[in-house]
Length: 41
Image (tube, rainbow, N blue to C red):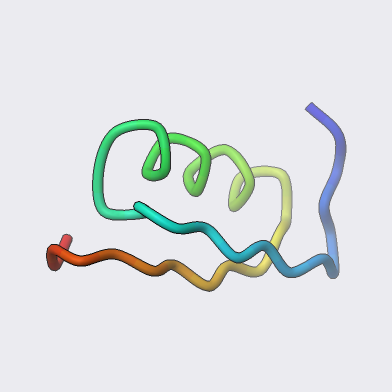
């Protein structure tokens, strides 16, 4: 995966499923995250 150091990612549906997994991987790659979800994680 590419490195995302100092990049900001906005992820919708971040409390479960694909959104959650994407958030985990982007965070591991160094991205700063803004998660949006209807249900609390």
